[in-house]
Image (spheres, rainbow, N blue to C red):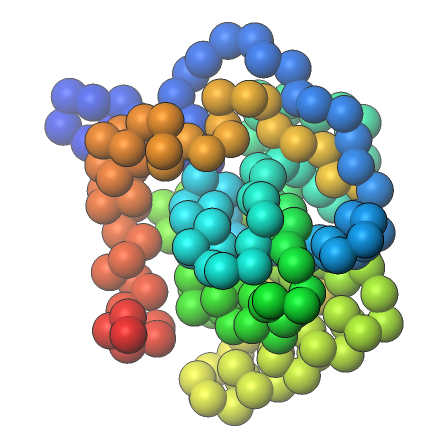
Length: 207
């Protein structure tokens, strides 16, 4: 997330922090072992995409990271430059016996602006555009059905892409669960970025 100025503060979805190499790459296979599956969604600021999934019974973990690009083991600074081809994304590890992929898709849509081709909310650039990364034919079928349903409901062009799952690179440690580690800064960023205001314009009041 690109830093921006509001008043005398300079905050973005990431503060300018040094170091912290990303963890090892993970293949976007959609399967995480017995009783687990995974889904990868790009919805702009990965800080903001973790909380709605973490609140769902059956979600085991959310991991912020980068995917879809050319650079191996990218850093935040490299991805935010827009030159790696990667998008900020979240990997959702879940128990398919407790929550379905279709339910995760519904949560994803409700937390993005599917009409924004330039990014998401205050963060602009290809690295912030929205996408569903599918790892199996079943995920693709479900994603395409959800895209069709959303397009029919909103009656406006939906630009969110459905892309083949690629290697997922976990982001630096300081990005993981940022909303829990730094709640005040997270809330400030989310408010200043206008995320909830725009989500209500697109989807109506949250239920």
